[in-house]
Image 1 (cartoon, rainbow, N blue to C red):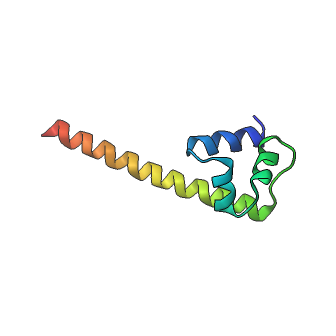
Image 2: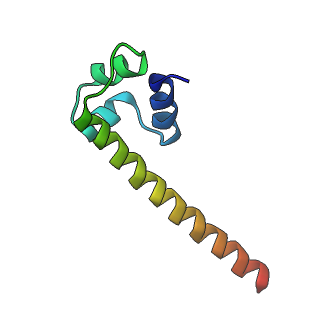
Length: 78
């Protein structure tokens, strides 16, 4: 799987459009398109922004999943 394919998969998993992702990391939508089509790679600063965004979303997702699991377990034990 190429970098572009991975980026697209992650973006879609988090429900972001190319425009939304571009706004979050402060680049153009065309840059996101270029990266997803393997026409180039983000520079180090943009890679860091993507990494930070992914880590934050994964942490949030894990916390949400953990809370949901705890709630289900409490309901089952009641």
